[in-house]
Length: 287
Ligand SMILES: NC(=O)c1ccc[n+]([C@@H]2O[C@H](COP(=O)([O-])OP(=O)(O)OC[C@H]3O[C@@H](n4cnc5c(N)ncnc54)[C@H](O)[C@@H]3O)[C@@H](O)[C@H]2O)c1
Image (cartoon, rainbow, N blue to C red; front, side):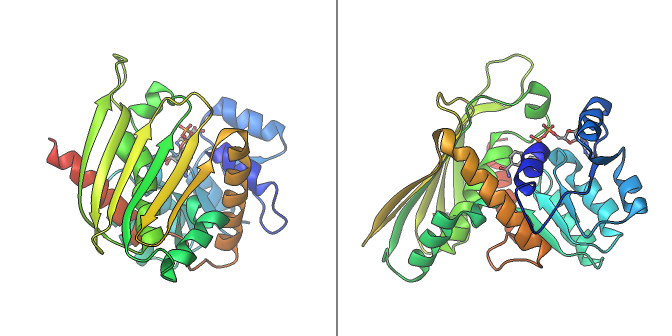
């Protein structure tokens, strides 16, 4: 994801990546070969200074540690979702940033997709009438590497938080209850799911549901379908080859909004905690 952010931000005229923390020597060497300044550790970057803010794209298990080390600088932090692997980790991030001078934004990039902003504006204006069902789908082309799958919290924490956040944000609702079902991977060395579905009852009595998958033939797919009493809309947010352009644009807009001081639609740590609370709840219910 760091590489995806790097490519997206390289298209911006307002914000630039000036230094990267990368502990893996071979990755750092390839970044240096592209002319980028690299550091082995977050502490080394903070000590060197010379930056205006940070983007955290470490594996999720390191989000808390990265934010802790960066917040001491008092500079703004854009942290990738899910902001830790659990409600307690996200709450720790909230506490750390609350005790610092830093500003925190969470990287739920769909909030910067123009078609979704337009959809939200029409929902907020009442165009859909009473909202009945919101269906969100996220189907990855192929699963990530086993070491990522085994440490990213499972399909609901790694992928499902996007759907919870998008449904909450676009409808302005909280999650009242949630139930989920998942299919475990059949690879012996993998502790992760290949597919998952969940249904949610939202605060305005709207139903939200999501389908998640790690295998999809045609590149990655992300979509949303909104059914109201008065209106219906389906948007393929990422589909086919055009998906990369949508993601690049949204990540650039997100970084630019962050650099310029924030955005009313940007995700907060409260949003990240709400998404993790929903997906953590389903995991606890099935233990
Ligand atoms: N918003 C999205 O759509 C989206 C998509 C993919 C991943 N992500 C998020 O991005 C994060 C990274 O995921 P990924 O798929 O790129 O993982 P990855 O394992 O492919 O890459 C992580 C990179 O971080 C480096 N790293 C490891 N520990 C580090 C540390 N302590 N400090 C700095 N760098 C460190 C690794 O060497 C590696 O280069 C995760 O939190 C994931 O949830 C978000």
